Image 1 (cartoon, one colour):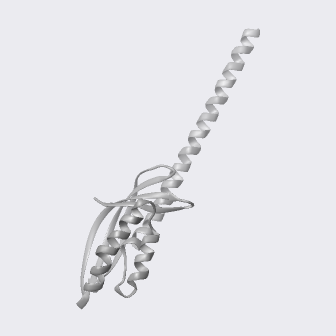
Image 2 (image 1 turned 60 degrees about the horizontal axis):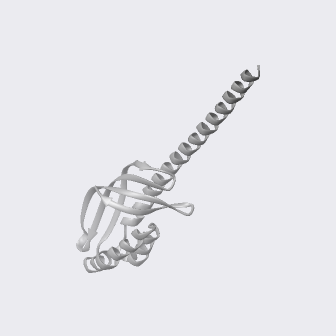
Image 3 (image 1 turned 45 degrees about the horizontal axis):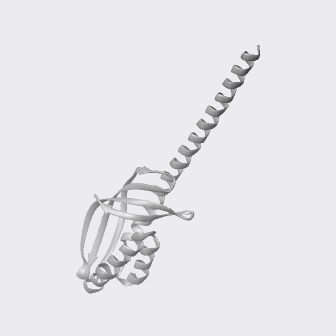
Length: 156
């Protein structure tokens, strides 16, 4: 009888450990799913702010663009804005507006999510010349405190 109790106790402990492990895994999966959803929403808001600017409000728009970024991407993007975008926009009177047409999560966990965005970008230059182009970008979103910000952007 003593042996039977020991076996029952062992099975009970194993069942409790399995239940705790399963609960922890479910909690982790839910947290990762929430993170992917939150990062996707943030990307759909932040990327148009990152890629859109108006010649009349260029300085403010470029500052707003940098506010969408985090990590080393901030320095890299600031260099592009300073050396390429700003002088070209001033010289040619360029304004551009980016709109997301479709988006989805490629991969992700609780702290980093990669999303794929399909964009339509309308660019207008002096003389009201405009062009519309479509593109796809893979965007790496990273948690920055309580927010999701852009940590990388690569055309695909």
